[in-house]
Image: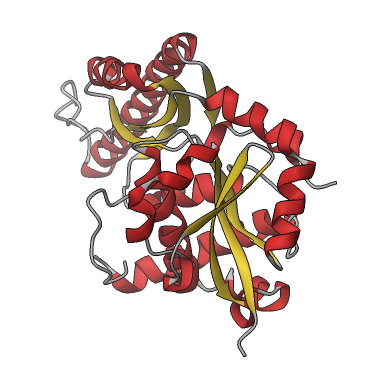
Length: 257
Length: 58
C-alpha cells in the first residue's frame, strides 16, 4: 500500500465543511480535497503520496521548478476557490502531517491561536500592488553644438540618456513611496516584499514597489481606483488579487514549537 | 511557462512564490523544512527561473 501524508492548505471556520464546492476541487497531486475539524478550527486537506512529500524528496523537489510551479498552483487553486466565499487563512507551501490523528492533535493544541488568526482576517482579503519605473526613451540633446565632433556628440547623448534615466527612476520611486504611504494608511495592514527579479517578472522596467495590503472585502474596488489614479508617465502600476491573506498571517504566533 | 489549462485568473508564478514561500500560516508539520532553507531554495530558484526564461525567450 502506498504511504500517504496529509497536505494542509488552509485553516478556516468549521462551517466550511458544508461548502459544496469542496467536492469539485482537486488538490496537490490531483487528490480530492476534504476538511477535518477539531476545537472550533477546520483544516482543508488532501492526501498526497509520501514518496514525493517526505522530507528528503520534498527538499529535492523544491529545487525543481516544474514541480514547484505545479505544487504552488495546486495549493493556490484550492485556496483561491474557497476564498471567494469564505474567510480562510492560507498555510505556507508544503505543510504536511503524517496522519489525521497528528493533524487533529495540532488543531486542538493550537486552537486558540488559530482562532485568533481567523479573527484577524475576518471579512478581509489581500491586494497586491507592484510599481515599475518606466524606462524613458532618451531625447537627443537640443543644444548640442554643431562644431562638436561625432565622438563628443555621442558622449553627450549617452550622458543625457543616463541622467534622464536616473531622474525617471528617482521620480518613480518617490511616487511609489507616496502611493504606498497613502494605501497603507487606509488598509488594515501592509507588507512589503523585496523587488522581483526583472527577468522573473518578465519586464525590463525596474521594480520600485512590491507590496501587499490587507483590506476589507468591500474596499477592494476603492483600492483599485486609488492605484489607477496614482499611475503616471514615470510609474507603471499593476494590481494583483484579491488574494487570500497570504501575507497577513502572523507566522510567529503559531510557528514551530 | 507550463502548458496546464489556464484557470479563470492566471496569476504570475513570481507573485505566487512571494506569498507561498514567505507568507501563510507556519505550522510545525510532521515534515518540516526550516524557513531559512526555503529562503535559500527561493534564491537559487530565482537563478533557475531566470535561466529558463532566457532559454524559452517568450
